[in-house]
Image (tube, rainbow, N blue to C red; front, side, top):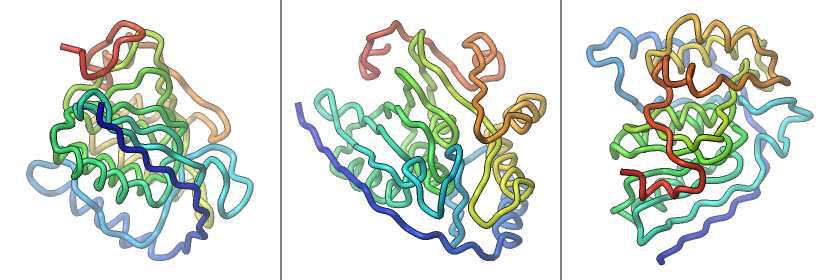
Length: 229
């Protein structure tokens, strides 16, 4: 089994500026044909979705993560925090394992920009996504990018309002709402998410997740993602 392990535990201070142009880029994207595709938004600002910040950089925002290539190079596993450096390392791991066809996610969340960039990579490669345990907050953005979106029978997907250092809750939630609209989530579902405080977590049951199109398949507990037919 070929395995690549990348660890990261770095803390950064985000500089917040130019919120308006960032939102404008999203609005411009929505008006374009084929608006359901994932595109990389090149921005210099950062919005974080991890719960309960205690400072400019917290364990939830910038904690450790691991990336491993498993099952003879067919599966890539991401676990931990969606930190600022994750998209680059995620891309490097996939470049070294071109036969990967499914991404296993186990994450409490992290930075929304990192999640969007990981989602862009997943979408561009037409990969499937799989959650065996937990995918919460910003992690759900990456999960939604999968071609097939698979969960185990006991998996939990968690949603709540966004927040970001230096931004009001209203500004953060505009960004989160637009991000979910890119995946055509129903407006009623998004509205429910936006009513959940950042320190809380809403975990819809599998029936609702399938009804709104977030989950496409359920795999037996203990099944590894690459073996799902």
